[in-house]
Length: 175
Image 1 (tube, rainbow, N blue to C red):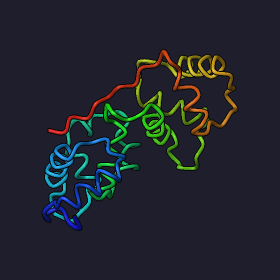
Image 2 (cartoon, one colour):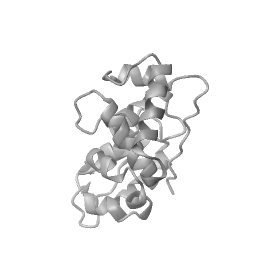
Image 3 (cartoon, rainbow, N blue to C red):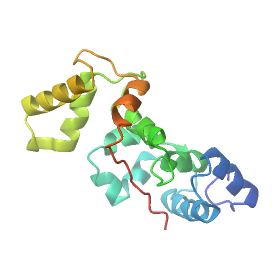
Image 4 (cartoon, rainbow, N blue to C red):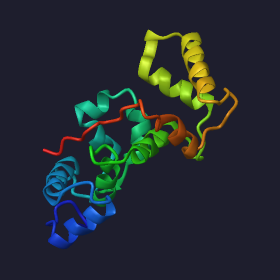
């Protein structure tokens, strides 16, 4: 598993399965390995920014630049661990942790109102004005018991997003 051209052994599969909290079956890990090898064009054992951007769906994602900070240089084991948060079997807190990392672009463990505005701007583009974004986020934060001045920690994100009425199911296709 040191480089992408090596063969995936049963031991490797089990190790990766354990690393991703058993959220993928062994067959899914084999399929993900094939995809990883396709993306790792130079067989370096990790996927570079350019290789990630070669996936049209990734390149077109409005959050791709934020996601690149999280995925650039991932080896296979960490690639699968990253994708595991998008598995239908992942828990809501696991999904929220990935969302938190997308918002926490400076990796300081805190999300500010400015961070929230930037992500919303990436997602909405010109469909919302700056004033509309501020109003919407201010209202959401207020309803959750926070102010614009608050710095949200992961625990705060879990508290806000784990609301029973929120459905967060995104499944990663592995074939």
